[in-house]
Amino acid sequence: MDSPQKGAVAGGSAAAQTLFTIKPAGASGADVKTLLHWQPVGNYVAVASGNRVIQIFDRYGEVVDDVALTAGGNVLQISWDCDGEVLAILQSGNTAIVMWD
Image (tube, rainbow, N blue to C red):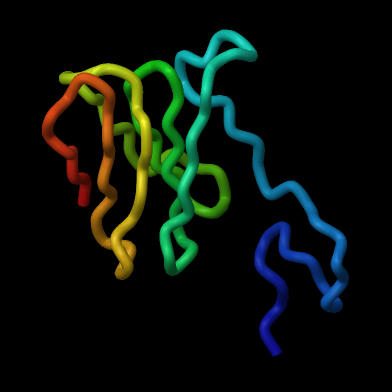
């Protein structure tokens, strides 16, 4: 039997553990809206806040990529495709949907 992943809950317990804490770059106040979306296969989480940068983290909290958005305003929604290969990013004031892969 494999040993549990880092931070995984052993023994089927319903208790949760914190794997890592994210403070998105540029988040300065409590009123900053933060969006996150797990990749369907669960290896990455995309995090967006009020600074127009999407941060991609691996499951251990390491930053994999920073996606700087140059057009439009605040991020309204982020979503992975069903295969988890492409991240769609919707912004206010931008008529295009940004795709990251």
